[in-house]
View 1 (tube, rainbow, N blue to C red):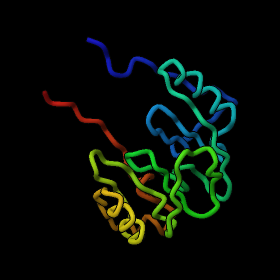
View 2: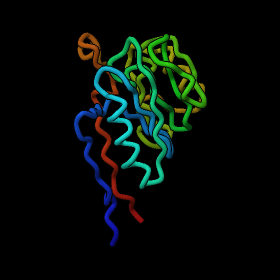
View 3: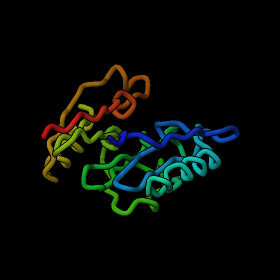
Length: 161
C-alpha cells in the first residue's frame, strides 16, 4: 500500500518559510514573500513541490504579515482579496471584497466555506455564488489580528467506500 505522504523536505537556512504564507489552490501553491518567508525559502519549497507536480508562485506582500491574511480562495479557485495589501496579478481570478475579514475564508469541503461573522457582506457574496457560508464569531481573536485561516487546521478524513 502506498503511503499518502511520501515526500518531505526541509527549508534550510538562510531560507525561511511560514505556513501562513502558503496557499494551495489546485496544483498551484502561492507563497507570500515578505516578513517571514524569504525568496530562498520559496525557492527551496519549489524544489520539493516540483517533485509532486506542483507549481510554486511567489507573491510579493506589502502591508500584511501573511499571504492568507490578505487573500484566500473559494473551492472553485476564485481568490478573495481586500484592499491593496497584496499584488493580485499572480492570481488568475480575483474578487475584491468589502470587508478585510472577507478575504479570510477556509473551504471546508463541498460547498461549505468558513468565514468570520465580521464579514456579512462577503458571506452574502459567497452565498450568492452558490456556497454555504459557515459563519463563526471570532471577535476576540480579531482584536489580536487573528482570522479564520490562523485558527484552522484541516485534517483530511478517510474516504469510505
